[in-house]
Image 1: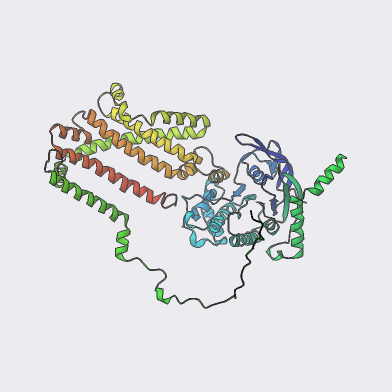
Image 2 (image 1 turned 30 degrees about the vertical axis):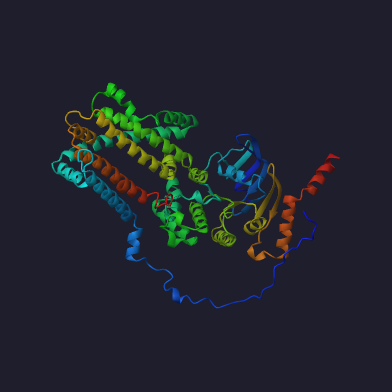
Length: 264
Length: 295
């Protein structure tokens, strides 16, 4: 087995609100390998978004380490492109094309001509060629999300970090976007770390699911869900798996019993 | 609460149906271009022009009814004086003198504001220093500093530039800082995500993202500067025979030449209108309106 692309070991994350010091995650371990569609799943308060921000380099762990390709993560960088839930991640003063090419220009990762060609190609992949010269405010939510994804992909980051990217979309658009993301993955085989609170989305999108429990976020389970997609919805194995995840997330009873057993 | 058994309404059964789509041929085109008249009436420039014409007509009627050109000259009288002084170059000269001083003061004001806000966003203490300074000096009328400016810089352009800088700086700095603060966190993060920091982060992310607010500051700063300049010129006016538009008004008042006072005021208003509705409107159309940040 090859060494993992992203190694998160013993990570405890804390942040301050004006009145409290909140522990978002406690000693979380997991690793993401090249080509994974790795999903972090958990109810709100399990620190999954905070964990993603830490991987993005926007906050430092108080304990433990985050390493990408063996290097310690200490600041944000274009090797870990983020796609956020909010639509305002696009720059309203730039057209679709300018938004997509902007990171490539700023990082100087590609020569000008190559950057232009890459931008054109990726915009075509997400089906927005006709809207190249349109400003973001004229796009629908789903289209804005496509631009954000295209922008992140064009830079060819080591890992794509997606923070509930489809949560603000309507159900029909969300399903289309999930399918598009999967078909893009089929073509390009990038590595993605995906945060969601929807069990169904986790199973459909993910090849592996990290189940987190809340207050503070701790690892509950890691599951292999390769081979399950939209076509599996309604099948028995899909239902069984989502019931299993549901009980992992919300059924604290067996957990308590186990603990009491140990204490007794 | 009465103990009667609750009557729970159940949905009544109705038959399902499918139907042909309604014939829309009677509506004509679903999308119809507006007629020429409709477009004219909707045009903002036309609406503003109409308002101006109405105001002018009211002015003319009132002045004719009053029939006292020492107190209130008619519009036609004012325009006659205005075009006479434009033709003989006096008004043009005075206006250019004023605008030159204004441009120098405005440019310095903006430069200082840019430096101050860039330093201020760099650290928390910088932000608080600038907020405190702005809170202190923004409400202080620039014209109140004129006596002090006269002591420091003497009679002449430097004093005028000083008060103009004061009137521009705080308004622009305040608005820019407010704009920087209200840049959405997601946008900041997506900027930092690609590795932007320092001056590039300010220039490529913060300034364009805060542009609506910066533009508002520029407009307020411009209006403050123009006002302050005209007022300051009224107070001490002239140096080396090159007075500005304020001096022109002041001179005319001394001669009790009210039509010329009106012509001077008209010039002040016209320049204000031109800057607002030509220059700033053009900037808005190419930036915040185009980007959908302002409707």
